[in-house]
Image (cartoon, rainbow, N blue to C red; front, side, top):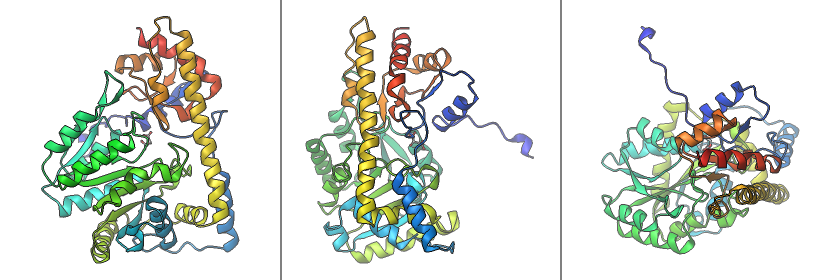
Length: 400
Ligand code: LMR
């Protein structure tokens, strides 16, 4: 009976790490998955995480089940970190927050909620977007379409196209937006553009759905990176926000994040939360506690919170340094004098190089540089020492 099961293709992002592990070359470089490495290209556990874990041991915390909605201390600090503790939505108790399995799990929970309560609505996803977005809505049976986002001619935002497509969508659609550090392009709207997007979404009665996977990691400031979400929330709009602590606290394998639903009244928020719990229970029962306690300890303690901000600045700063070095090396080595400055304009963990699939294949097959086939490279996996090698590989592949 299982003989009829066909082989699934490797995952476009996590499959790259599998291929990297199988490569025996010593020059190999994994720029596929967005995971932070040190200058020595080693994984990094933040000092504040170790301190938070020590606190947990000292306190002798137990392993009892969490409530379906997760750890109360975590849910409180995560919503405050996102919206600001003094924001009206928090003060008025209008946010339903449910701890979930990092970004993906939170998106999935919201997708199941959309499928149940808005069966006729479509989700609009940026073109391009993080590869897993489409899988999540497909599996939740939520129809989706794309809106224009990236303009290959300017290697920038196709703002007009984006507005046109959001305008053309049926009223009451869900518009999936990347809160900061758009994945994969690294291109974000400006604050003025965000305000125009919010105007249009409001006019069309759409529901914004933010994916916030890099708060504090894009600019190095937690508040600045949440400003897009706060712009929308301050207008009194109802919205979704999925949060992840994989990158900013380096808690990749702890699967810790949350789904926040801003409602128009505390009463509606209580009802929405009850329904999210109802969806979570048969899916995974209740969430794991370890990562939630780490976040609650770090964000809830002023000393650890400040140390975290410093460590985040360090990580974001290292990525900015390799971004600059890669640009310098590309500009030096490129005899065709192509303008590579788009690399400096992109923000966050990634650079969207513009390499097509064949060129990306050349990067891997000839140069042992592992990356996704859409031309995205994770600068978080790059060291200053490897920039020159990478620049040679990019130039060779680009002019092939
Ligand atoms: C990525 O885009 O590389 C990360 O968000 C990891 C993932 O889960 O795909």
